[in-house]
Figure 1 (cartoon, rainbow, N blue to C red):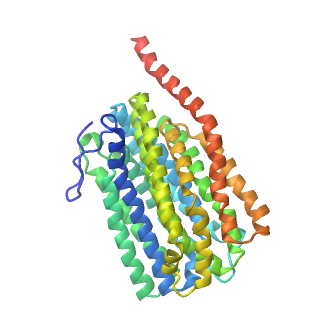
Figure 2: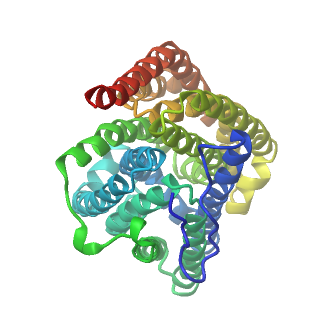
Figure 3: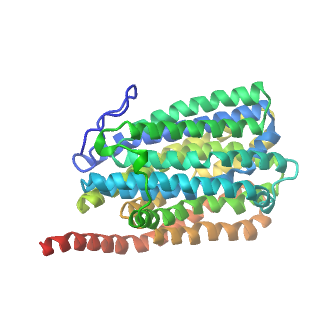
Length: 469
């Protein structure tokens, strides 16, 4: 693998070797910047909520919070497409095929830009109907629509950044995405204080700050790729669309996007139920999302490491090593779920109160959600690791179907059948761990047969050229 010298001024070390040495050590070294990236993202998001809650009031925070489930649905699905890029690029790197990696890079960046523009155009027209469908409270719906319409302007930049960061991580470089996020996130906080606290733009200021900093992130990651050594360099003149490469990316990315988005989609009926309890419940729920976000971002970062390691090992046909990757990843993610879940559960009142210092009723709503979710989040760690391992093998559709049934389907029934009889946030969100358990049971049934079949197919592909020689 060519040495990655990085960009002048950015602290980049040699990419982590995922194919040799101790797996646990390499996983932790690679995952730590990913976890820090997730924490920074949540810290900046929490700072946004803190600024809005303190300087614009609980109504403005509720307006932003009411859009969360829909925004996460969109981000999760199209962000899931980046998983297709990650796996394809990791396979290329594991196989030592730099030319195929370059093709993956040039195709995926252009594809991301095109998709981002289409999503931006679509999002501008569906904001109000979606919020109406979710029964957003009338006193905040206009502000929520305004926030969404501005927010969707950043979709091209967000798609390009996710793709560029995925390409770097597929090569074992998880440090530069952390640097880029730190820089853009700090700018986002500064702009939020300026726009919301100083200029009093409220939700307009929050959305505008997000758009500006997303384009900064996209610029930084593209600049990094364009300054690489020749073997890894992004050249704008070579951006292209290749049918076979697009098909490979979408074959993994679309089901992966569905799989991840089912987690967000399953929140829509739950958010609708929250909205039915009024503005205080919405704002309390929005504040509690900061606890969930920190915990889930940690777990997702660790499972992403599992996907990248598995992808490189599969590309190199090192199947014994993939087993070790799965076991070590499971140990790491479950431990993280237990530790951070316990912290979130025990400190739920204090954390939620940071965002809503003058709304004790809203704090009580948020604490109910945190109790139901944080206490059992270690179960999600198991589900996430199984999904990540399958994705590293390029297996995306079966897990996506499992998530549709176990997450979206179950929570939909729960929100409309169980919740009306027990209208509290705790009883609403206890559906999370139950759905995760259902998903794990189904995934365990299909995991071994799918992995065995994938290995046999890959071995046959390797044997075919050898036989031809």
